[in-house]
Image (tube, rainbow, N blue to C red; front, side, top):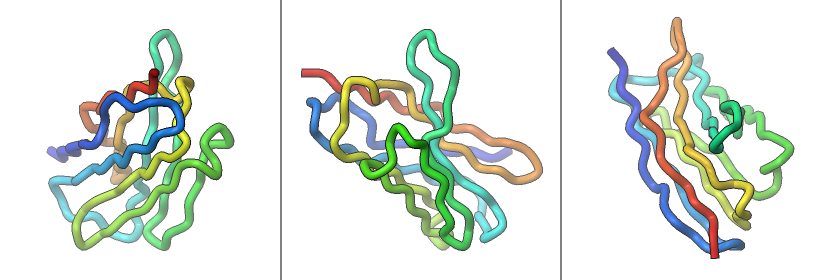
Length: 114
């Protein structure tokens, strides 16, 4: 059983920043894709950003230029730096790890509101 533990969510004003972190309970390797997804109320879960072991990233157009994904395999961690947040970024953010299947964290709430 793999556990992914997210942290760093919270309430922030528009224009503010948050940093989300996710720690895996197992060793992660360069061939494991990791990423962040989000789900807003009444909407489907959507991809935010993914990163390969080699550092290649795939970032959603809606957050490109504002969000940055990174990972440290030795620390079993993937991080999402979120800047210039808007109310449209409000959602439950999930960490994802791909092995022979998808593993998901429990989610961390991000609320952008004045």
